[in-house]
Length: 127
Image 1 (tube, helix red, strand yellow):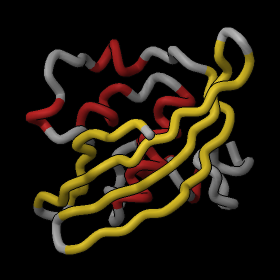
Image 2 (cartoon, rainbow, N blue to C red):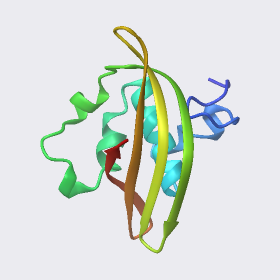
Image 3 (cartoon, rainbow, N blue to C red):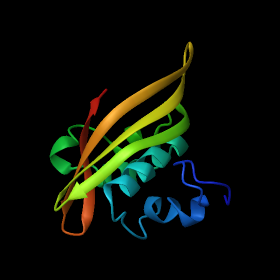
């Protein structure tokens, strides 16, 4: 798969999110983590990655098989802003998906924490 990555970067999948999804390297910013998690949801089958990048206390009863299911047809990702300071980070984005009555948009401001050298998704506020 050498076409543009689903996360919206102009790089190829193999040069963008694939190394993260295959857990060869860890994203070094909250935005890279969020983009790779979007790609994992868009492709389906990456539940292990999604679970491993979720802040453990927030995981609750989610399973690898549940997170691996492709439940939405994701169409587009637009990052509106991102940043981080010390061990806290955020990303605001709009993700377009195919709904039952046409396209719908998920607008979220996600928060992240850095533990050691790895960023983790904590949760998000729907806008």
